[in-house]
Length: 337
Image (cartoon, rainbow, N blue to C red; front, side, top):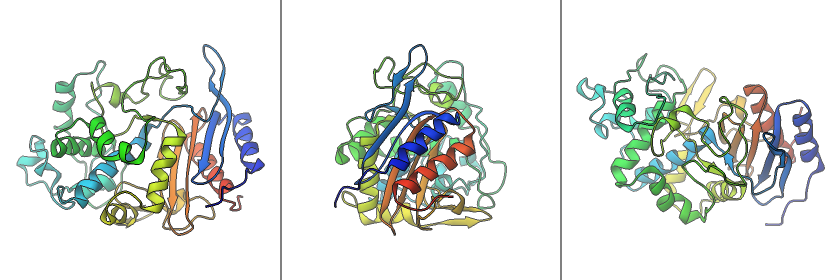
C-alpha cells in the first residue's frame, strides 16, 4: 500500500483544538498514513513538546484489549458468549439467584448494571475491591437498555484471568500484544517515564500514573482499561483489526457484528457502532471506542480506514469526541462540517 501524503489540514485542526482549549496536544494517524504530533506532552511543572513516541493513558480504550482477549477465548471454544457470567465468577452474589446476565451482555453494556463504582478505595486492596465488586447488583433486567458500566469489563477481565490462569497484563502480552509486535504498551503505572503524557482530567494524576480511580483501587490490572500505549503500537492493533492477519476468523467476526440495536445505541461485542460516533465519511460498519483522557480508535472495514487519535484532553468530553472524529475524517480525506 502506498503511504498516504501528509495533509496540512490535520495539523491545522490539531492547532485549532489547542487554541480552543480542547486539548493540550495530540498525536494521530491512520494505518498506512503519516503520523501527526502537535502541541504539549506536559505543561506542569515543565512544558515538553508532543512527539510521535509519546505514551498516553488510554483510559477506557484499554477495554478493547479485554474485548480482544475474551473474543479469542470465544474463538477457541473456551468461553461461552451466552452463558451466565456467574458460570465463570461463581462468587458473585447473583450466582445464587439464577443469574441471566450473559458474557455477551457484559461486553455490550446491556446486562442491567449501572456505572456506580462501590469498589473504589483510597488505597489498593484486592480483597476489599473484590468483595464490593461481587456484591454489586443490576438496576434493571438484562437487554432492556444500553448503559455504559465499567464494572462489566472488570468482570470480563477477571473471567480472562480465570480461564487463562494468568494475570490480565500477562494474558494481554502473551495472547495479543506480542503476536502483534506491540512492545510499547503497559497495563501498569509508568511513573517517571520520559515519554509519558500528562493527563488533565480526573484531578490531574501525577505523570505516568493511571488516571482511573478504579484501576488505582486494585494492585494489578483491571479489565476496564487504564493502559498506556504509543500510537505506533496502537496502529499495529488497528492494522490487524482492519486486515485480519493474525487470529481466527471467528475472533474478527465477533468484534464487527452488531448484536444490540435499540434507541440510538448500536453495539458489537465490546465496541460501539452507534451512528453518532461514526466519523463523517466512514461507513455504518465502523467500530469505535473512546477514552475519557482524550483517545479514540476506529476501524471501518468497508472503506478500509483504521486510525487512532490520541490527545490529552483539557476541554468538554463530548466536544472532545467530536474533535477526534473530525480528525479521523480529515486524515481519511473525507469532508468535515
